[in-house]
Amino acid sequence: MPDLSPYADILASIRAEWNQAERTIKDAELAINEPIQPSILELRYAGRRLIEALEKLATGGEQEDICKLLNDAYFNCLRARHDAIDAASAGFIITINSVPEYLGYDPVLKAFPDFPELLLKLTKLSDLIADSRSDRENRDKIYHSIEQGEFPKILELYKKFKSSEPLMEKLAGQQRSTTRRNDIFGWGGIIIGVVGLGVGIYSLGWNWIH
Image (cartoon, rainbow, N blue to C red):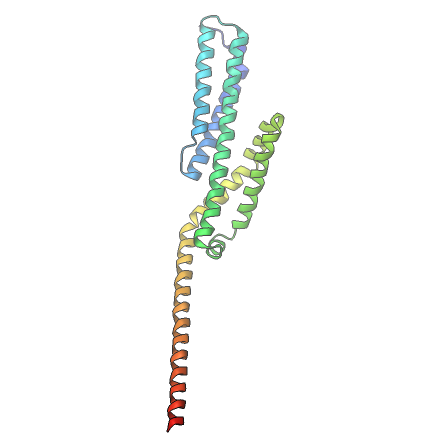
């Protein structure tokens, strides 16, 4: 059996990153209710690199080539985590922008008072992701800080936001009913007023003629 001891550290790192990637991907998928295809592909690529590295190891390949393949697998796992955060962030922003547009801000704020906080955190998250694009050297550190800091908080707030949607819809429906009722009463009052005015004018005219 080939000796794996020279690669023990990098294999341990790959395992840790793979486990973390799967957790982040699952959290993101459950939050936005759809698979994160870019992340899934990155883990597939990582698996392929591992198989290629093991094949080279079994057939006496160069250590340098084996290490390169293992390093590629490690970075595939990192990219899988990044892609999961990116996809979740995009999904969160689409939802929290579309729901108030559809239901109105008043029902949203009544049902979920933390909406401004969630919006602010997502804005900061988007800024950090944008920063990572222009700062490639520190990209991994930026995503690590996101994953360990704001991302779990945003996930919790977003879950509460989603669980509040039935109440938002109920409040929006009540608001629409109240608005329609007020409109009906308002138009009714106008019509009665116009009729009353007409009757008054008619009466004055009739009295004047007679």
